[in-house]
Length: 223
Image (tube, rainbow, N blue to C red; front, side):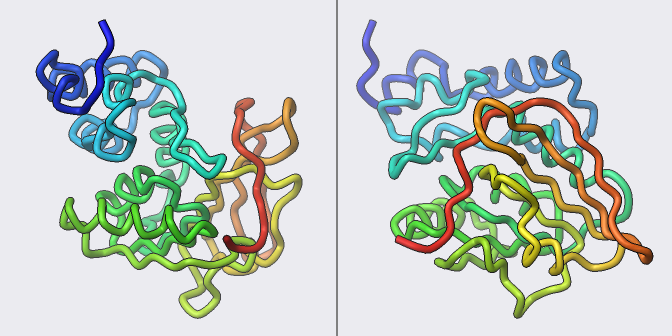
């Protein structure tokens, strides 16, 4: 059977709350344990962040194309990166690099006091802005700009989350972390990319290489 719209998917229960609950249970089995992250993932309407033609796949644990060579990350990766970021001290001010569809932004905005998000593709930024407005998430500030530059006007940040893979840690971003702040980013070039947790301490930096991942490459500039 071919589904042609989000309404078709809704009629078959593929974008319903039970579908989200099945996703939450799958995330729990995959090792996600942060209760608030699981709760937010279970109620966030991921189908609203993808094209209607892909709505029936919105709650699969897979990345989906969103245009301009970008993807919406698989739910496990969104939950995992969020869980890592939130471990430790309270993260009130978080910078996201790569707004994309706005899904990761919405998850963060549901869990921290303020999110600043930079997107290099103007059309993606505008689409994400409309979606976040529809969800009444008012604690988000979006910017069309070069993610490699971060958002120094609002630094220092308690956390930084990067949604594309640079070959190495972008120093300008790391410098925008406050003391005790944490950056979570994929790093490396395909096929060897890993999730990195970088923490700024009083004496320098502490880093931890975590699991292998697969992300689109980190691109500088704007379009």
